[in-house]
Length: 312
Image 1: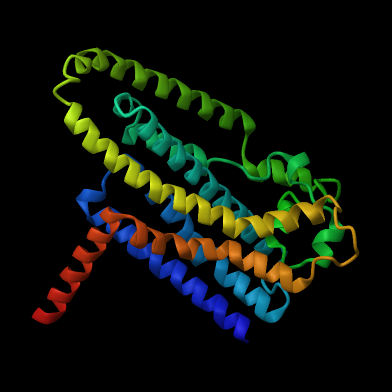
Image 2: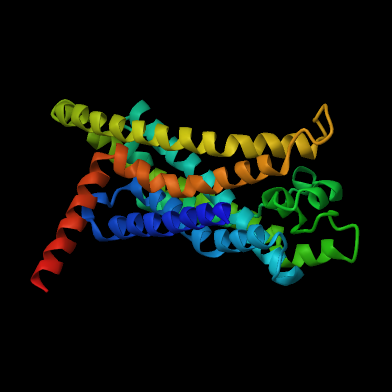
């Protein structure tokens, strides 16, 4: 029961924290930046994880069994891997955005725009986490003996046997969409990015003539970008800490690397599994603790709500 209560608290923090961040990002013009557009995407994936994934994981852990049928299990696992994969790629996009902002501050405005970020986000959410069967296959024995290893078992959304039985492979192929369409979408994205960069390249030459007059402004912008980069480094670092135990357990089990039998207990699975989910609850706290812009936005929102309550 104590474990279920802890899981419920994690779920509550994930939903409330990310909803508050989402509201701040949408309602505060000061947060309408290219980087924060990517943060918005990360927040949405974390929020959906808290609404559609974690509650079912709590029920499964509490009852020690899955209660929603085979189809429900497939849908849940698919959504779990999809949202987790989207979160990873969102973090990669944010990290690359911060790297370019700090490494090439003058060129950064020409390669960063909300349009390009929108294309990045669209690509991230179009990824199929089960399309690489050889990389995503896990043995029946692992799934059978580790029912809580949902992310490992999520390779069964194809399903576990990789399509060797009951025509699952055909079902998986039709359910996940046409690879041709995905390839076409990728090419359209590349062409769009190239055309956008060509248009902006013509503006770079005219901007260079005013570099000296903008030197002071650039230094100020660089300090701001460094501040945001530090926040991003903390977010990525915490992400690695939260998911490293689960990733280690997954690799050990998937490739039978344990020297001793039962070297990984069920308790270790539960801790690693929920430590990964807890990452979605930590992100809003990190924004509040390390981002000056987010703290200012949060204070503004809270003061506005307090004034509204007093007037009532």
